[in-house]
Image (tube, rainbow, N blue to C red; front, side, top):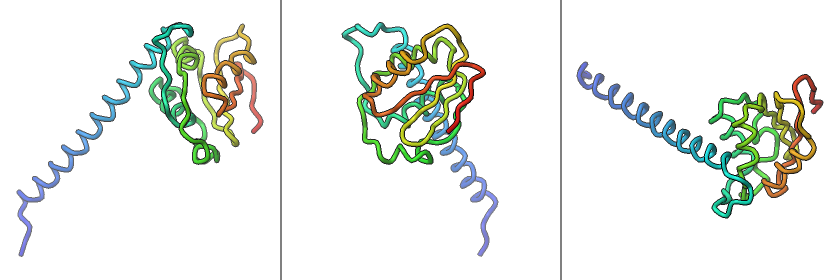
Length: 154
């Protein structure tokens, strides 16, 4: 009892088609997410059309970083925070504006729900931006903004 070459070819091609379809659907989902974040970044905070998104905060930040091509260090689940935090209402506009302005160069997940954001721009009040970001995530995540050249001690 042997396996014909045609059967191997058809099974292999079916697997390749499924993998390509999955890759295309993921790319389409990421593109839709990126378009939504660009729209949120262009809307003013007082706009009544602004809506909140329900998600796990650290997972949302990681997804946004991947969509905008920002480097990530660490992982929310390894930082010990993603499994403990429930789904939270997120107001994405302040973080989306930071990504759109090209200020974010690196995001680090520190322990206990702290996210360290390295920004390239200078001349802004890091403390007030960190407070605004924490409020937009319902206080479930603590943000620390570092300007270019500053170091973060975990």
